Image (cartoon, rainbow, N blue to C red; front, side, top):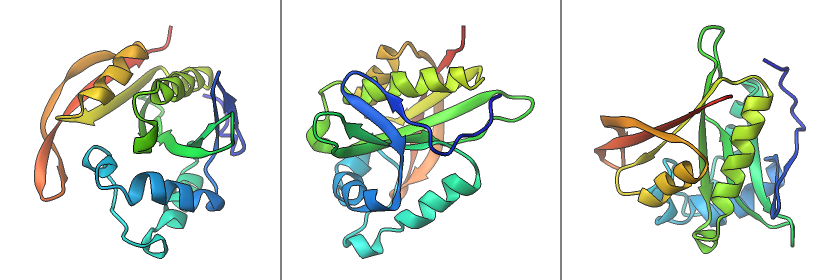
Length: 179
């Protein structure tokens, strides 16, 4: 696998994926962590006020573990609309990475998530990852459609896999292999 390059930038037709940075806090707070509807499907903590949002801790965790965490940025106006990131690191035995993502609700159903996910999957394969996995919580069929549009294959349901918001959730798991 290739060496971790902290300043990697990826580009698609309408989007740029660039490293998340401290100045993205307001946009990520507004689009994700202060929107309960987004957090119905994305496992993270709701923050009432921006100063309560522990964004810096998240950035440090990604840096420390040398995992890619990108801001999803619209090319047309340089607006940060969400995030996409590695949830796991590959091991010497398993060359598998899980990807997670969240896009602000005003940008849903416009193809941005699929565009970002395709770009991220391609990048993971470029750096030597063999298998990319992703999952969504039960009830989030739109995220499953994103995964399918990106060529991912349904692998199965993990019953009660996640405890979130006071209950257990099934996860619907997808994968794609490098060619």
